[in-house]
Image (cartoon, rainbow, N blue to C red; front, top):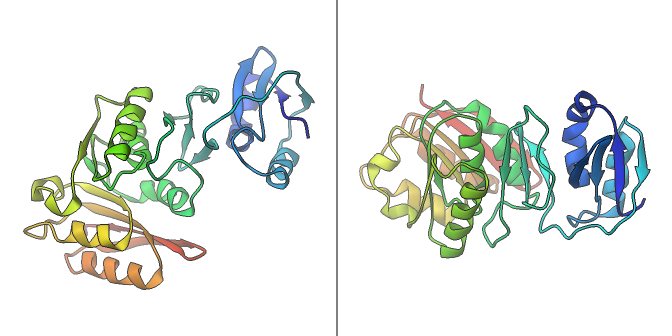
Length: 260
């Protein structure tokens, strides 16, 4: 498998295949197709050979070096996430552009994929991306037209990364990024919002400790293993929210809850 290939096809065919092609690290559109650098994002050869075998369009080897990419590109939850070095999405596919940094959510962690897939189970409206990390969940929420976002994290590096990614994605008018501890949020920043919280148990507990026990319109909880998930989900259920979807990949779990 060469380090660079060109998959050929008309725009409609390439768009239809793009969810698979995205995993092969697209780096440029050319007149007759899409240039891919399958190993530039750090994925292994066996994984990439399997992806290429699933592509139904013709392809050929391409000359030239593979550019270094900071993390893999992927499509999930109807959104293409990429670095500035990846090729842009085809027309009609929502995308977010993530700058490289230290915030969680850039690579293919199971919780990120589950959360993106479960955004559709939550009601529209303003969102709180609690412990936002790279900002991927808030970016996807805004890009999909679901509502404005307040993204908060205690890590200044994550705050800077999420803010830069919002700008790179052209979403800075819809996303406010702020450094804050979750337990210090104003109750009005939780109540009436959809809360997206893919974070460790200590962060989940801090969010639940916000004064006045505010009730969101929906909550997406992830970043937890089974016992911790039962405890945190139970705390939101005690506030009147109802589980509408639960998922798990290996030891990681995600749960979506909504107000009745």
